[in-house]
Image (tube, rainbow, N blue to C red; front, side):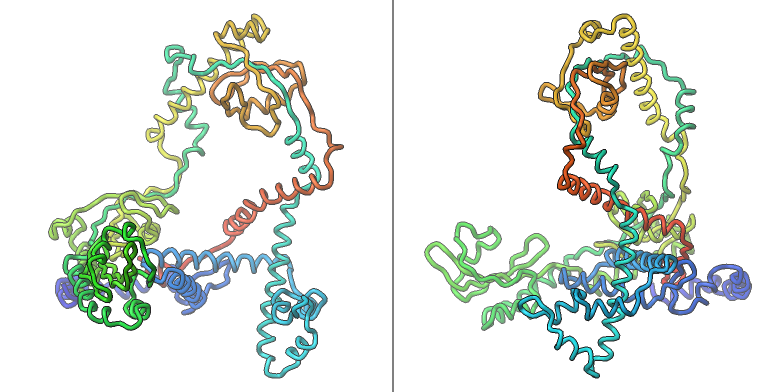
Length: 595
């Protein structure tokens, strides 16, 4: 249905819009709408009062899109573009936060520092790259001539600005890295963990030995655990929604069109003087290759080439969403040389994609007026339901979709989206239920809690049983007989280990290992609750690390390892903290009409 029909059907609505328009404009004075618009046509948001310009945002998105096209050779999909749009926003927010932090810390670069980066003894790698001789030294004469040349004045201004910013960022990086310095104490403690060993004997009493009949779990137990551990059951904002889809996969007509396009090129392909140029000109999805191939190794779909004469082109072959035609070049008794031209079977951008887009747009419009389910029923469209969670773009039954998540995060219950273009379909979404973040209700997590509480009661029961046995006789061998098990041993167990290797197997028990290294040689533990069993451990022999053996080389190796571990997580945590503390205003929904 066209625009005029929509207007005719909506005459009553338009009149009401006109009646209320002045009232709405007056009410909006108290909202952020005009504040966002008044921030100027170049403002997409603010970070602590500093504007994010639309130009900077668009330039960043364009950079990502260009990189994607150059890397893949394909046009960007709407879903991929949505991903890059979010990435561009995060880039700009992070950049401004870092710049503001540098200003707050007073991180500056003097003119002399910039001069040293250009003409100093150890110039910046950019300068070195431009003026370095073959022997690795800097051609100072050429550098000075380039600096003094009048026609280079604007270039040098740009270079100086870039070098100043680079140096400033280096100082900021050094500041962040300073928070990740590894102390001598940390190095020594790691050396001790790496070089402290023990030989142990132990008795292991599995939790599985405690039967269900020995346990009693009441609802009060479950409620108490839930009330004391609500933080474990926090959930992000979530959305229940319904949607209809409009398939944009290639139709039979699209397949026929692609086959005919290939057929029309067969004669030109046969007479082409340069097959490579021909494939490039017509954008074959199979790159040019003309090598002899063993006839027995020719793929089944390319077997028709064996029946062609040299220079002859095959009929069109359809397989796996592509069409092919083959040009035979040469042949020996056992090998054949040929060129493959192929096209993907794609949906026609007008006859198929635009048609589906218009259908989706019409549906969205009339669903707003007549009801989502009613309009779907009238058009005989299947309404599907789905669930999504904030900050998780994966939607079960649909797949990855940042566009759907962007709509849901900015929508109110009952809102209906416009057409959202995914990889092979348009969807129109209606948000039915928005659940705010917070702890999940007890009823939703009761079964999980029951499992946890039952497991802990089983552990406590087993530990108490072992403790009672120990009270009667603390001898490890007698304890093993009482528990119906045997004494096991493990030698050369390291302080930094997380598993106990025994009888060709591994017991992952970091808590037990931590407890046993609190004991001296000859000492025996009480009941220790491990992951899968209760342990009673005797330290037979202990070899403690000697810090006198910590030489400079080992010290440096440990320091570098610990530094890498810290660097892997600290920077992102630091940036996340900057964002949490910042006042970030996002006007994208208003200005980019993402809904």
